[in-house]
Image 1 (tube, rainbow, N blue to C red):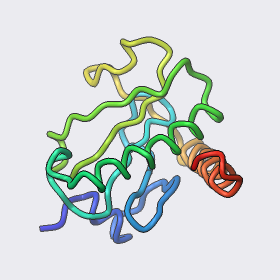
Image 2: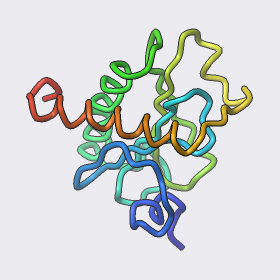
Image 3: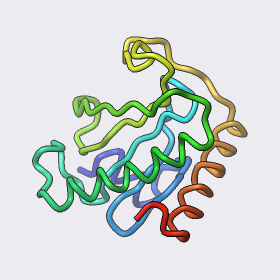
Image 4: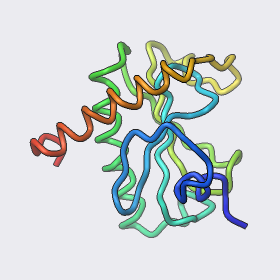
Length: 140
């Protein structure tokens, strides 16, 4: 059975897509810890991140770096935190979370609620920065 992320990738479940290429996709988390909380997912369904082959894992981190840099340009924060838990969905993924302090990364924190319009704006603005920077060569 396809994971929820595979169903999102296939367009069966809607999401706020921010960036994608032929191997990876980045979209906003539906239960974010902070506004802009993003998931980076390989399009190939593999349960455990460290079961990805070396090329796929390295490529996912490079893709995540591009997205994180774009997030930092749009969202006021000190850093973009990175987390890999891998228990909630059986499909490898990376959480990118805008943080101002380490405690912002606690998954026991209350989730924030954003409107559809706020999510659409974040996805559009971050996605525009990914595309702009990718075209200019600044992310290569």
